[in-house]
Structures are given as structure tokens and as C-alpha cells.
Image (cartoon, rainbow, N blue to C red; front, side):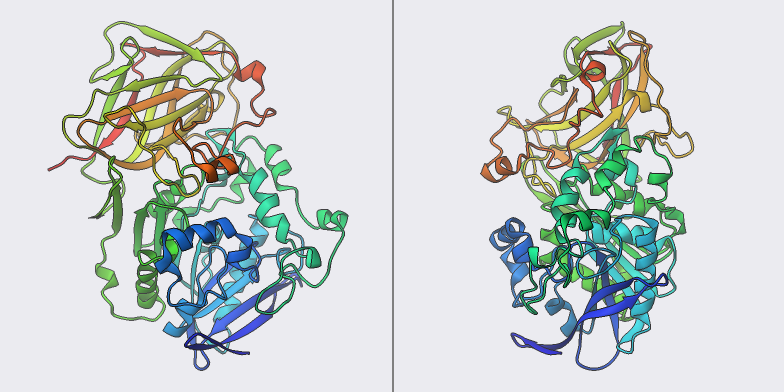
Length: 576
């Protein structure tokens, strides 16, 4: 049907059937110019293509209206959908926008089983279907946030013939290390996200759910099934995750071989996405075999920069070049665009050639347990320091900086520890404090009060993969448990996800080694308090089955000295 929205006229095809090879029929909405053939921007996912952003995600929409009003200008916003492009911003520029409800979600039939090889095959077939339509040029691009970014890495490794370019915006690519388990610890994200954002729009919710404000149809299909029928039609993802605490086939079949990716890509990460989003964008950029690949790293929420005047022009220039073939100079864009954070709250854009930065001066700061500070070399004599294995731990701090100190890159920590039990969970927090002693925090992708960096490791998962580990990014196998002998000293290498901060004069850098999730000690604000967010957003590790107190509630001892050189390896960027 032809639609006029403001001063724009375009065509919308609602609920177009897209048949999979096994007979399941998915449902797609197609927004396109009135005439001609056009490149395609496609998303496939479980968030219900007919659910209005403003209704399903009121809090986030209000934040976007309040803090980035320019993102909503130039559109009636009648077709806004969570984490997907606004067709009113793309169709007038000659793109067809295709939204597909994933199998078992929204208006697509089938068994709901998210983040599986079946879904990746479905997305492959949707790409090829879109390329074959009469309104398509045959060139398909993938663009979306989070879920709509994460499955891009998976399908790109399958190399669908008509996938022409992709922009994974803040999306993970390693299901074990980035989504389900952090350093071997169960993340609470899936258990909160799955019922709230996915099961709530399962196909068959029907009249009990939302309605598309443009069509009046139920966003979750015409049928209204009983709760028992709905449960039979979906997997129990949180329960399945708990059945697989090690990195077995359940996780590996969801994780792509990045070297198989050859399509042009723009990987966009968020410094504050700790707990889900940033690591995969860095790993994907480094691991993809694509000769035409770019990395962008910014701050703010995980949706603001996608829609505002920072992200939208960048996305269009990239797709104009690769999907339309425009000679717009994109090939001369810097391969790495970084918004460098400063401890006074500023972000300063800088262009680089590679990641990690080639000029990085990897600098060890050794832990001095007697002064709770750092030294250039290990202490001359053996030191030890105890802390509660379930508590706030101990913090090591520099003296106030006399000159700006820039840290941009991945961070690694080597700890020598012993435990009073057969295991220990290590939580690491990289922090900055201002001259008055107040911690510097930033708006993260989910939480308003995120620290500079986070890392995690369960000591029984300490075994490294020597082929994939680097001094600055330890890589653990997570394929077996190796319990500790109480009182014996063990060497642990812990990854802190990539970060960027310029520590201004008078500010201090700190490392907190602790036994539970980070909590911001300042005022978190009413919004975060209502959500229960204390600095880590929904990415917490407090499942009692995963962390029984009889194992993780004793004492941990840190060791430092000539034979136990505990230290943090920092990515110092020279000022000249």
C-alpha cells in the first residue's frame, strides 16, 4: 500500500511471506520507494517488527527524545522499531528497508529458539530472498543494534552470495565469553532479557500483547495461544544456558569463525558497553578476513549514536559506497575512528590506522600490597594480602597524575592468588578518581554509571589457549574445570575489555580486585534505582547455583613479589 508520512511518499508491504526450506513461513515488512529497484537494508530478529519503539521501549524512547532530539527530526516516527533503522530516513534516499520477524517471534510461525544455527540459516535465506525480489538490485546490507548486530557476524561467516556489506552496531560475536558467561561466571543477562524482550512478543501471544499502531493488527500474530502452548513452542534459554557452564558445542555452534568473513564491514563499538557489546566489535574487526573493514568506537547509550547525527550519516556514506556504488570518498575514511574519553567527561575524536594501536607502549604497573599502590618493578620481597572472597576487595591506586596519561586499548591483569576454598571468582574494576576523590563514571550502553573497565575470571577456568592469547588479551579455553588446592598459589591472567581514558592531571587511576560485581558508590539516580542498576546494568553474576557460598564465600589472598609479579598491563599511548 502507498503511504504518505509528512512530506514523504513510499510503499509498504505488510506481512510478506518468506518461506524457509523446511516449510516454515516467516513474516516480513517491506518499506520501499514507489518505483524502481533499490539496494536492501535488512534486519532479522525477535523483537516484533510491528511493535512501536515508543510503546515497547518507552523509557529508552523518552531518553532519546530528551537527550538527542535531533535523532527524531525529519520523520513522523510512525514506523520506528527498536534497534532498527527508521524507514522514513532511508527509503527517500533510495533504499528498501526489510524487517523480518525471526522464527517463532512476532508474526513469524515456528519454534522459537534464538541464537541458533537454525536462525543463522534463516537469515541467510532471507538475504537471498530479498536479493531476488523485483524491487531489489540484488545488493543486501545488514544494519541494526545488538541482536540485529550479533547475528550479522554469524551469517557473514556463512557467506551468503548477496550479502554485500554490513554494519554490526554494538553486537557480541562470542556467545560464551561475551553473552552467557564472563570469565566462566554465569551472566544474569539472558534470564532477565529473554522473558522481558523476547517471550513477551512470541508468536501466539496475539490479543494479550501489543498492536501495530499503523495496521491495528496484533504484533505477535493473529492467534492467541495458551501459556502452556506458548511454552511448548519455545526453548527455555536461561535453563539451557545453565546446563552448559563450559564452552562446549552449545556455545561453539553459536560462535562464528571470524576468519571466514570477507564482506566489507563497519564495526561500531561502545566503550561503555561492558557486559555485552564492546568486545565482539573489536574481536570481529580484528578477526574478519575482510580487506575493506572499519572500526568506530563511541560512548553514550547503545541506541543514541545509532539514530543521531553521529551515526546516521556514517551509516549512509558506508552503504552509499558499497550498496549503491557511489564514489563518495568512503575508501579514504580512516580505518579506525575513536572517540577518546577524558576523565573530565569530554570525548575527542581521533583517527587511527589499526587496532590495537601500533604505537601502544604496553606498560606493567606492579601491585605493591604494602602501600596499595603500584610500582615500576615487582616488590623486592614477597607480599600477601587477604580479602573476603564475596566482598568489595582491595583497591590499588596511583598517585595523582602530573601529566595527562592516555590508556586506549585492551587491558590485561596478571594475578597470583591463593584461596581458602577450591575456587575463586575474580572481579576486576579499572577506575578513575577526580582530585576530590569522586569516581569518574560514564553513561554506558545500559547503565548511567559505568566504570572505566571491567574484567572477570573464575580461577578454575584459568587455562589459556596459547595460540589465541596475547600478552594484552589473554584468551581462556573454558573447556574444563581445574579446582584449586586451598592455600596453594596460582597464576591467573585476566582480560579487561578494551577501554579508552585520558587521566587528566590531578586524577588517579585505580584497580579494584574484588569478589562480587562492581557497584557505583555515588548517587545512581532514580531511573537506575528503579531498574536495580548499580553500575553493571543487567550484566550481573549473582546466581546462587553458579556461585554457591560454600565455594565462593571464603577468603582470597593476593601475592606479589619477585616470584609472584602481580601486575596490570596498561595500553599507554605516548603523547608525542
